[in-house]
Amino acid sequence: MSFSMRTKNELSREMPENKCCQLAELSALIRMSGTIQLAGFQKVNIKIVTENAAIARKIFTLIKKCFGIHTELRVRKNKLLKKNNHYVIIISSEAGANEILTDVGILRCKENTFSLDYSIPQNLIEKNCCRRSYVRGAFLGAGSVSDPEKTYHLEFVNNSEKHSEDLKELLWQYDLSAKTVIRKNSHIVYVKEGDCIVDLLNIMGAHAALLKLENIRIVKEMRNNVNRIVNCETANLNKIVNASIRQINNIEYIQKTEGFKILPDNLREIAEVRLNYREASLKELGQMLDPPVGKSGVNHRLRKIEKIADRIRSGKGGAK
Image (spheres, rainbow, N blue to C red):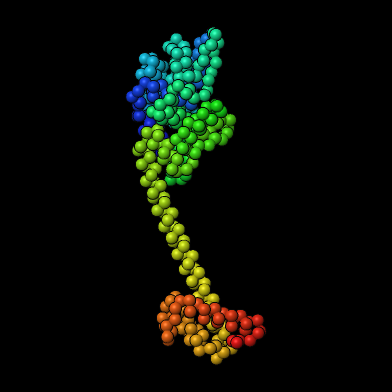
């Protein structure tokens, strides 16, 4: 089971106690996953489709709690993929579809004319608890969250541009940096930062998913820190090895061409020690000298040897 599916199953078990919150969540669910069908003059039917049985049960329960209506529930096989069922909830006009759509702020009736309003009804999200319920319903209706092992991404898929903008503004009220994009004629509201997704899961009430995500984030951060340390140490080791090879090549070149006789005593001493202890660090080389020399002093002498080797290669002679 995917992380997104586990999150939705958890949220499906979260039932608001207050009717105002139940109505707000149902309003979001219908907007995100419902369709309205004309059934005659001033009559409409509501059809809500989901692939998640837990979400279907929650929608059924919310409608019963808010309106006392027993809806028709159908299970339809997905003939294309032959694995997932589609759960279809149908509310006819006779059963009270018009009343439901009016109460959730979708259907507007004025002078015997109907109009559809896709914006978020402000009267349903006046309280913070109702706003949280609305966001939860929107996620259950058409939301998804990526596997945090791979990436941090949570999104809501909207058919209405107006609703996507309202939902983005609603998320910004919680300081969540939500953004919108159009993908395949759908309006997507998405959040990508890990901290924002954690906050959003907390707002919706998905506490188990939140803890799972936080554990994964901690492990990933530790893994990344270890990788950075290893990469840094590897880079430093490569740098030390390359410098040692270059120093030894310079010393051997001087030895084969001009000989150590051209080197001052202090340079000849460090050259001999470097050849005898090829894997030693600069600090260790300095401790072998008489008298001992610090790391910077050893590096200074080896740089002088490198300049002498370069002068010999260019034909300008040895030490000066």
